[in-house]
Length: 117
Image 1: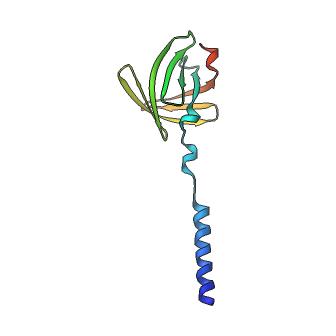
Image 2: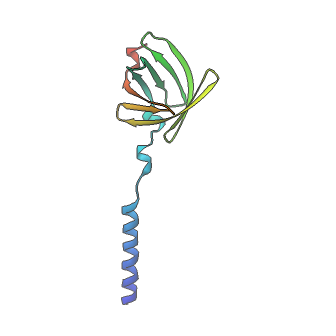
Image 3: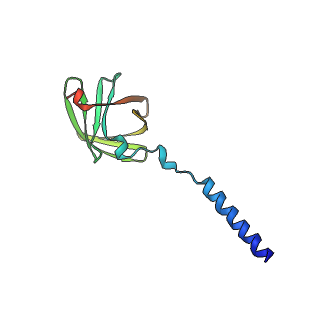
């Protein structure tokens, strides 16, 4: 009987440690719902619009647009436009989108697309 209690205690302790050590690593990874919408960079004077389904477009304050398709996998964003393909790393924190390529990080703020088009 003491052996049974001992093994039961050990198993419960292992299960508790397993539950405590579990961490949802996907919390920091954007998904198509998080990136959906319009984002504008004051520095670049341009914006990005993502529809949440793989289509989007670049826009500027003059109403000009250029379409692209995209795929978001974890933090890797791949954009295809005009025959070119670009891959960058993205990080979303509330209303801020950071896009990092090999040389720099650009910061975009979530905006209402109707203010630009």
